[in-house]
Image 1 (cartoon, rainbow, N blue to C red):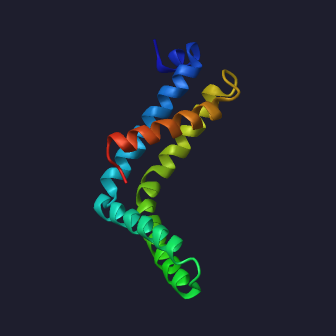
Image 2: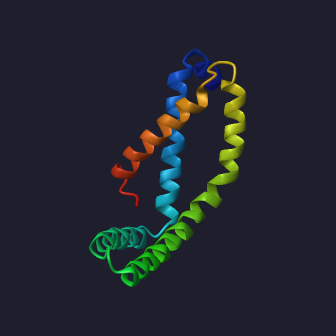
Length: 132
């Protein structure tokens, strides 16, 4: 039995399994090609800045300073996120083109099944694999 036959027999299960596998691959690529220690450090800085923002509510100068620091952290986090995105973008586009061809008639709401499964898988996999 080929993969396409299995996907056509069990479309919902198939899309959930595909979403999990793609999310696993994306999570592993992210873990491999990003500096996890630096990303965790930046997220901690952002948490600390959010606490400082609550404390400095009346002081506009202090609030602007904290917002500037948060913006710098966000930009650095975004730079770290681009490398895995660049690595996986083209293969994902090709894969989604193929997936659309398989699932459009079988499961009209396939994308929503994929999206929900992917988000759920991502939350679980990032916790299990300790990815920032």
